Image 1 (cartoon, rainbow, N blue to C red):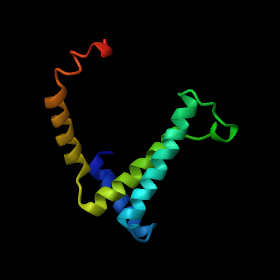
Image 2 (cartoon, rainbow, N blue to C red):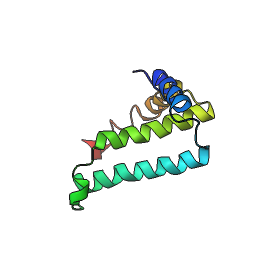
Image 3 (tube, rainbow, N blue to C red):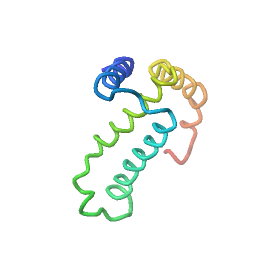
Image 4 (cartoon, rainbow, N blue to C red):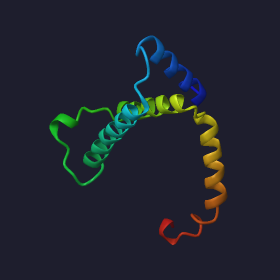
Length: 108
């Protein structure tokens, strides 16, 4: 699925099943909450914290999809074409960092 298709699919889901978008501030709070859930899994599964029994069955991919869903909602609400924004962002990073990372001794 292309990003533009994902934006359209989420928009259709919101309008048919979700009834309407939550306002932008609510979605921003929800995005923060979902990112926190991803961080919790990463910190416990791959970091130094021990994983609680109740967290061992959490699906990291599902939690990342929750983040993506809310991010797409925010993009739709604010008129951001994420596919174009990502293309521009990658071009910016490429121009800015093309030599920086290659010359970084810490990455060798």
